[in-house]
Length: 92
Image (cartoon, rainbow, N blue to C red; front, side, top):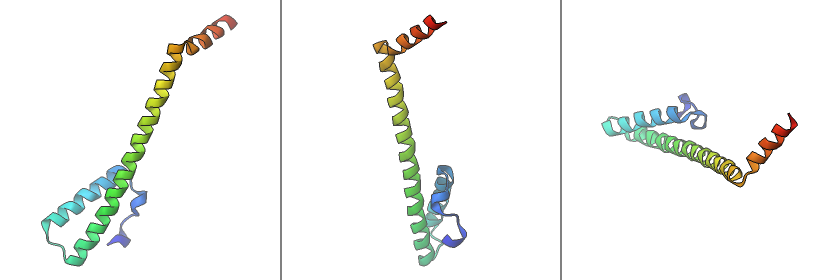
């Protein structure tokens, strides 16, 4: 089963999530053999970990962007941005 499917690490969040949803449906249907169920479970665990990793990365990017925005706001509050803009205006 795993040999015909793409490597989990190469999947986008959406691809991993969709495959995980399909695996859960197969497991809930109960039609798979024990070996098939174990293989599905293992693949599902890997897919869930991939999804979590991608979500963690997205969360970190959002956190970093919020920090950057806060830094710009702090600079504006301190007048740093206005000083730079005023100096540029004087040059023209």
